[in-house]
Each structure stands twice: as structure tokens, then as C-alpha cells.
Amino acid sequence: MHPTLDLNWFELPVYTAIIMLGAAAGLLAAYLFLRSRSRRASAVTVFLDGALIALAAGWVGGRAYHVATHWEYYVARPEEIAQPDLGGLAMRGAVMLALIALALYAAARQIPFWWFADAAAIGLSIGQAIGWVGALIQGTNYGVVSDSQMAIDLPDLYGLVQPRFPLQHAEIALFALLFIGLLYAAFQRPRAGTLFVVYLLLGSLANFALGFQRGDDTVYLGALRIDQVVDAGFVALAVLVGGWRRRVYEKKVK
Image (cartoon, rainbow, N blue to C red; front, top):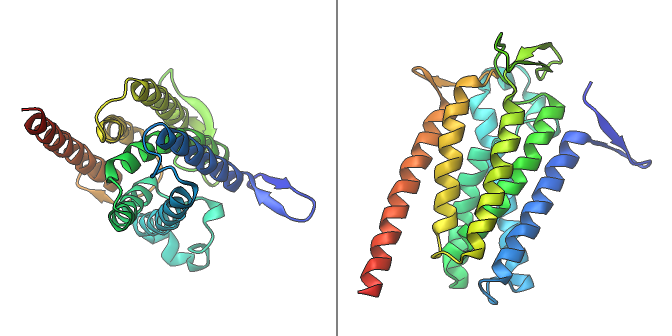
């Protein structure tokens, strides 16, 4: 039985409430960052339109990715595909589709994409830190059963409590620290795109390493989870984008 909030006129799953809180905190952080960088990009109508597009694309991408990577579960329970409140919005799929949608929106508005990307990095980091609290409460994305001294008695999605690697705790700490680091870096006013590259590089490297401690079922490619393969792709993308942005900057200052 998953915990719910009784709001008198309806019940709201705690997991859903925390995800909503994470999204709201991420949007606020992204907006405040944009206000300090671009008056045009932070105009209320421009920001809200972009936020709605990114959220809608992220929801579709996150749910599609989760269902695809847990197909053996959902093929036997097709009625749960449309019930994300039970758990199942994969951040990697959400980030991929949301960034594509945001790039198209920025091009249509003729606003530099990198301001939006940096704002997204700050918003995503705090949003993910809060979202992983929801995963901890819901029992999703749980750690492997372990006999190490770090192990904590934690439930899986089905409520089975065993000594597990505290994966959700590690992810909460990871993204909270990443948010603090990005916030500090933002006050140094780095080149546009830098915060996004740092978020993608550090977040993906850490998630790749933590992937070896995940206990939930998913698709594997050889010895790696599909999530780790995607993380490796994100790391490569961050390195390529960072190198390209640096060369572009060096050419401009010459």
C-alpha cells in the first residue's frame, strides 16, 4: 500500500505530490536564473510557454522510456501503463525529449538555447534531488540487496524489506550537492552552456557508477543496464559539447 495525502475532496499519492513539488522547485530555480541572465528569456509568457512545452515533452519521454525499459512488467499489466502515480517516470527519457522540445522552442523564439539549457540544469538538479525523496518513500529505483556496512533495511516497489545499498539516499545527496555547486558556479557568471555541460557530465558519471548498485529490473546490454549505456552517451555528449563551445569561444576572443 503506497502512502497518500487525504485532501478531503480527493486523495493524492505522496509520490505524485513530491514529484510535483520537485517540478515546481525546479521551475522556480530555472526562472530565477533566467531573470539574472536574460530579460527576454525570463519574460513570463516566454518562460511559461517554454516550461509547459518542456514539462509535456518530459512527461511523455519519461513515461515512454520507463515503460520501454520495463516492458516485461508492463506487458503483463497493460492497465498500469497509464498510471504513473504508481511509479515510473524515467528522468533520462524526460531529459532527452524535453531538451529537444526546448531547443525547437528556443529556435522558434529566436532566443539562445544555451540560456535555457543552463536554467534547465539548475532546475533539474534541485528537481531530481526532491524527486528521489519520492522514490525513497515509494520504494522505486531501489538498491541491490547487500551485506555491506552501508546497507539499510529498505523496501522495494513491492514492499519487500531487505538490507539494501541506500541508492535513493545517494541520489538525493548527489543532486542536492550538484544543485549547490551549480548555484555557486552561476554567481561566477560562466559562459552560456557551461552549467549544462557540468550538470550533464557530473550527473551522468555519478549515475553510471551508481547504476551498479541498482536492484530494480530493467533491460541490460551485456553487463550494463540500459540506463548506464544512456549515461555513457550523455557523458560523451557533454565532452563533445563542452569542447565545441570552448573552441567557439576561443575563436571569438581572437
